[in-house]
Length: 441
Image (cartoon, rainbow, N blue to C red; front, side, top):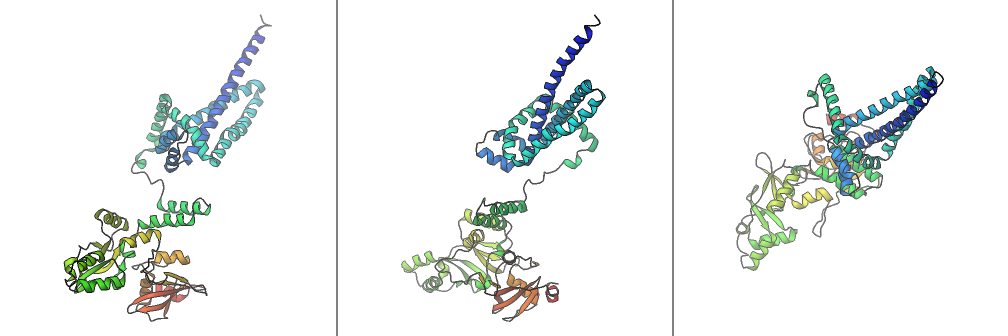
């Protein structure tokens, strides 16, 4: 009896040992897959998941469900990873101590640190960082099934509830921050263009679309001094002659003063009246209603209004009701796609580069566009255009050739028409002088 008992005990231990080894391998494999899913799913946002779903990729549907509410999968995954690694580490310690005695604790610790961390923690997560799309699509169905498993969901909810009792949940209430900000979208477009994913024109269009949402009518309107108008008492024949000579299809009609716009004359309506024998009628008899918008109206709202009401021109007024300019549908489209020049346009180029490296721009060019052109950040404190900046810095209407310095840039009034600066030459100075600082102040 005494000689057989150790043999039986030893054989029983070896059988249990193999069972524990199988359990350890399964747990470590599960922890590796869960670590892979944790990294890949956290890196995947809703936009990427929707794109994969539109491409009908396998695993995209559960992936979209998971990333819609990341808090629902992250806590169960972290809990399962912790359970798998702790249980496997405990079993390794048990086997090592049974095989090697006291040295088994040291061997088990080394195994846990090296093998578990390297093979089942670092390797899966690094691979997920390098291949987030493949890892997310592979692990999403597995994680989706686990978080739907009632025991896992219940245990995770209980443990998270205990944590909430300790730290409180008040700070977590309220609206969630946006997943993607406007600056991040612009940066994504820049990176995509730098990596040849999109063309330069596509990047420019993306920037224009985003900037379009922040722009107001004042920034794109034709100013009051540049408006072409007709008097309400002029005859249809004379009005048609002037309209055809100017090349406009729609012209505001005023009653004595541009602040009193009574309607819009359409070239087609004037042609029809002339052909019908009404050339001697006053133009006021053939007008269409004028639409008025405040100068602070958003371009997006105005574009939608023009589409819904089917009109192409609006008269821009300030807070006192005075006419400050006009804006057309073409002006809004040009803000998106750039200048549109037809056979009637005779304007000078908006930007002209000189041999000495300086540039000449129209005085109506927006400060933001000048910053993009020369890589600066000029002050914007109550003016929208480079001409307005010159007027503010100089304190008077400058004479042609007069200049001001600001932030390492010299602005030269190349052409002044009446009280308006129509062309400005921009030069980079070697250093920011004191005059620039004084002018800005």
